[in-house]
Image 1 (cartoon, rainbow, N blue to C red):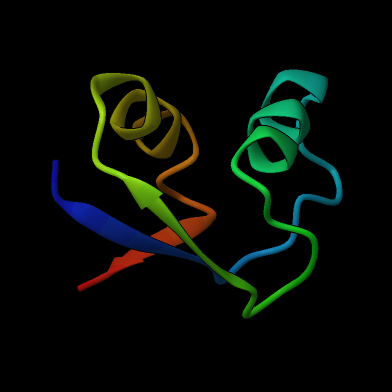
Image 2: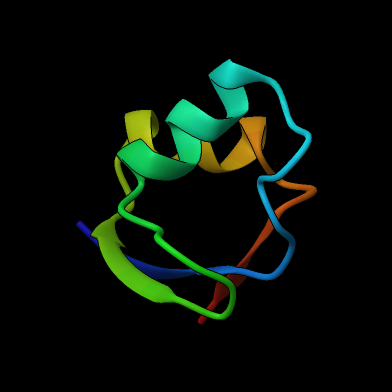
Length: 58
């Protein structure tokens, strides 16, 4: 499976609890934090749900 790097570029402040939980589930803790994950359908779905807060770094 391919790996992707996810970077948080916008704050989770004033977002819904569900979006905050998704950011936390991805392992992101602060702005400009980068984590690496396998590109599974579950991870890609989480990234899509918070696509306005994160970017995928190849």
